[in-house]
Length: 78
Image (cartoon, rainbow, N blue to C red; front, side, top):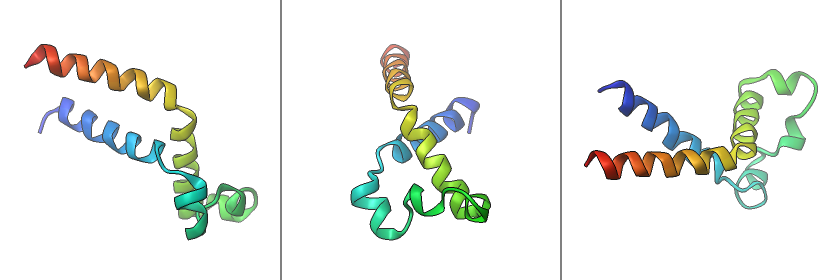
């Protein structure tokens, strides 16, 4: 496994986190940002994961650009 494969794996994980919908998926399972924001809950492992999910959702436009770049690299490299 090379560095490129590892980076692709992390990028696929970022894609998966970026498309999660709070109303349909996160809220009914108790993973809403409003439920863990502030206080000691935000420092828990669950709070950290929810923060990561919301951070990737704010970075959707750069993720789309990186998707296009990776697709172009894959097309050119064979």
